[in-house]
Every structure is written in structure tokens, then in C-alpha cells.
Image: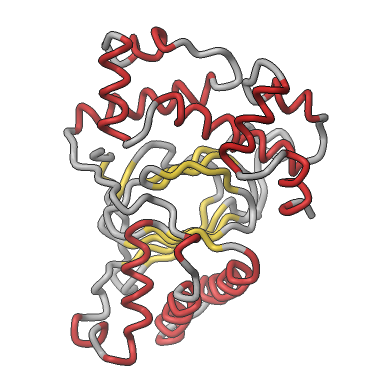
Amino acid sequence: MKPHLLQVATVPNRSFSIRQEMVPNVNSRWHCHSEVEIVLFHRGSGTQFVGDSIRHFKAGDVVLIGSDLPHYWHYEELEDEPNYSEEPFATVIHFSENFWGDRFINLPENQHIKNTLEKAKRGIFLDNSLKEKVAQIIEKLYTAEGAYRLILLMECLLTVNQTDEKSLLASMGFRHEITNRENERINMIYSFTLQNFKNKISLEEVASLAGLAPNSFCRYFKSITGKQYSRFLLEVRVGYACKLLLNGHLTLKQICYESGFNNLTCFYEKFKLMTGSSPLNYLKIYGK
């Protein structure tokens, strides 16, 4: 799909930008830009869209987004967050793939950096010790000056290069060539789903938003996103269930209904389908 084209602000005395976002949902729409993006989340959580990948994000996560790869992060309600805090929600880095010049990036010693930028075309999600290493580098980079900024950015990319195929987000065949009108339509469908996934959503209801008959909508949505709408809705619900499960405040039965499922049998079946494990095993693996 063709996402909203975002113009990233530049600073005359900087070859790339790094900023801290003090409010959530600054760019809460499907968008892309020519710059590569690195995001470190400090607080808040929600649903992450990168290409045709949908997953939950939380504080501490680090994501690398390649040039022109559509994405956005939808923060959920921030019940536990104050209206204002001196701590940012995220630190965001933007840089052009060739800002350091073709000769430099094509040096033999920089092959690992080129590998990272190639991987980033599908999006990279860092996990475990790697994200902690990159987060520490980003913290230093935010206050660095002069050539140290370049050195730390290179260190970020070299560390990210240690990721494997499992860390890539968008599928190999993901494409997003489509008109601005379709981009607005898909944004509307995404927004409606994120606002209503806890309730029953009929195919007729969501199809009417797109101005299509149900059968036509099914074909349309798959042609745009590469997946059935039912699959998309399931990914959103299971992603939210994972968040509730790790929070540890609700019973499995409460999580089931809070995530939009009608009964526990269906919840267990769909959860295992999407995550590869039962809710309890998932908690054992990923819970603190």
C-alpha cells in the first residue's frame, strides 16, 4: 500500500537527526519516509505496524525501519501514565542511507553496515541482550557531539547486524504501491479496527467503511495487505492478549473477553495458532 509520505525535519548543522518524543501517537497513521528510522521506546505500549507485520510493542523495545517502509505505532490507553512527565515516550533517529557518501558506505570494512541497511528494508525488531546494547548506545548518541555521533550510529548498525532472520518484520514479498486514495481508506480501516477490536466486528460493518460489499472488501483487503481481514483482526486481538497476559493483572478468562474473544476454547485455539504456544507457556517464556 502507499502510505502517507512524511517529511522528516532536518537540522543544518547535523548530518542526521535524533529527537525525543514527549507525547505518544505523534505520527499515529500509516506513513513512510525516505530516511532510515531507529526507535527506542521508553514508556507506554501498544500495537506496532511495519509493512504487513503486526505485533505488540512495549517500553525497552528497539526497532529499525528501512527507507520507504510503511509503519506506525498506536499507543494504547495510558492508564498508568501521567499526563506529563519529563521522561520521553521514545527516542527516534532518522538518517538517509547515503548521507555519509557512496564511497564511504561501499568501503569493504563497511559491509556489515550495508547488510544492516538491507535487512532494515523489511524492518528489524531487536530482542533480549541486543536491544539492551543498542538502547545504551542510543542513550549516549542523544547527547554526543561531533564525530562521536557518527561513531555511535555506526556502532548501533553494527550491533543490529547480529540479528537473524527471525528478527525481520515484514514478509519477503511485501509491496506497498497504491494510490493516495487507497492509503486513506486503509488508514480508516486500521483505525476502526484498533478502536473496536474488543467488540464483535461484522464483515458488513467494516466493508461499509470502505464503501464495498463484503465479498469485494475481502478481495480488496487481501490485495492491499497480503492477508485476510479476519487474520488482521486476529493478530490485533492476540497481540493485545499477550500484553494483558504479561501484565499479570487479569485472569485468563478476563483476558479472553477483554481481547475480543467469545469463549475460552476459541481464545486458546487462536492464541496458540498465532504465537505457537498456549497462554501459560507463553507467560513462562516471556514473563519476567
